[in-house]
Image 1 (cartoon, helix red, strand yellow):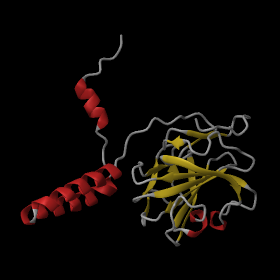
Image 2 (cartoon, rainbow, N blue to C red):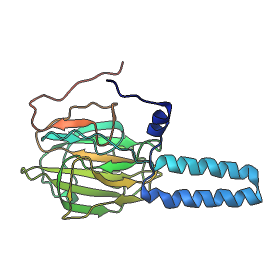
Image 3 (tube, rainbow, N blue to C red):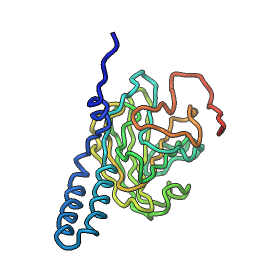
Image 4 (cartoon, rainbow, N blue to C red):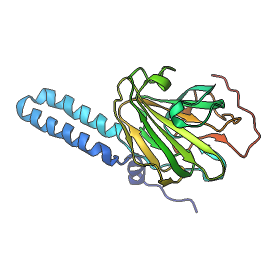
Length: 237
C-alpha cells in the first residue's frame, strides 16, 4: 500500500533545520530587525529579509549517503568547476604523485555544510592562511585561506579535502580534529558565505563526474575505487 503524503507532510519536508553555528547570526539579525521596527520600520523589513537569508544560508538538510565500500562521495553542494591532474599541496603530505583534483564551487545559495567523502580517521588537519580571491578561480586552491583534511580509510588509501575561503567567505569552521574517526557523509565543517572545496583522489583514480555538473554533498558519487570504469565524458545539452 502506498504511503499517504498529506499537505502537512509536504510543508514539513520543505522546512530544513538551521545548523547550530548559524543560530547566533540569525539571533543578531532578528535583534537588529526588532530594534529597527522601533526606530525606522521601512528599514526593518530589509533586516527581516537579511535575517531570513542568513537562516537559509545556514540550513542543514539531512542527506541519504551511499555506503558501499570504495565509493567517494561529494564533500559539498555546488557546481563542479574543475577536474584536473595536479600535485597536491605540500601541507597535505600526500607525496609528489599526480592526483585527480575535483573542485566544487559553492555559491552563496548552496548548502555550506561540508561532509566526509569517505569513512576513516582524520590523520592530518592543516590550516593555511592566505588571500581571499574569487573561489571559482584556479588560483584560489594555492593562494586562498584554506583548511586541508586528510582521511585514512584504513585500506592503504588517503583521501584529502581542502576547504577554501572565497571572496566573501572569510571563516572556515571545522567540526573534527586530528585523531577523530568519521563516517562517510558525516558533517565535517562549513565555510561561511561562498567558497570552494577541493577533493584529491588516490593516484591513478579518475572522476565519474564532469565539469558543470552539480554535486549534492553527502549523496553524489564522485569516484569509485572498486570500479574499472574510465573517466566519464559529458556534454552540455
